[in-house]
Image (cartoon, rainbow, N blue to C red; front, side, top):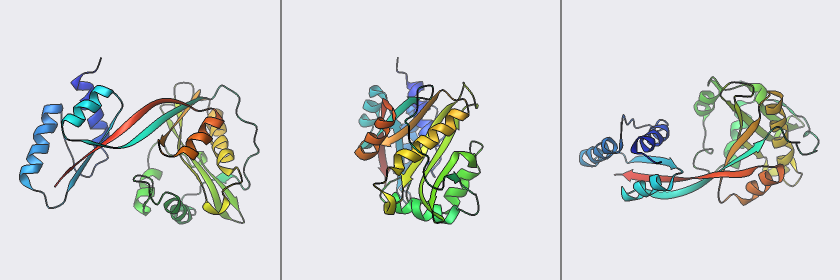
Length: 237
């Protein structure tokens, strides 16, 4: 059953990544703080983003002035089932922190230029991820040709390595210059193989609802839809 406490937990999880800090305990607290922001007329607009799956939570967000902006599909796949038979991509190797940073950033920002979260990263954004406890360079796979990155699959493990954890395809993409060669499928399968070697039983990923090419690719590899998160946004001028 949906409770205001569960909704507050969703808010806390979503707001942790915002530059503006909210220390809320419940919906009433959030409403009071938003009203205070409105009354104080901040110099710069404040953007509040919520990631909500439960319909009741979405309804409450809409009633409080939040507008839906994106839908993200949560997909899962068993790692105990057979992986597709496909050769490893050419020049497969692990990411080398300090050596691959700039080339990867340039390629990533080119590929995700229109993406609200994955695009427009700078060195600090990447360094922040590389310094997280979950980061393992062995799980950040690159395909290369003549020394250049052609595709990549960055994996992430939630929880402990082994049967109690779950692996995530954190981000995967192919260079525009190397599309049409089935590299996307090959690099993602390589990422899944890495997660399987970690003795994980399940993999997951998130993909935008309007990215039909990626969704079709993931389905062909064995991923199925597990849920949908609607992203709501409220701007306070």
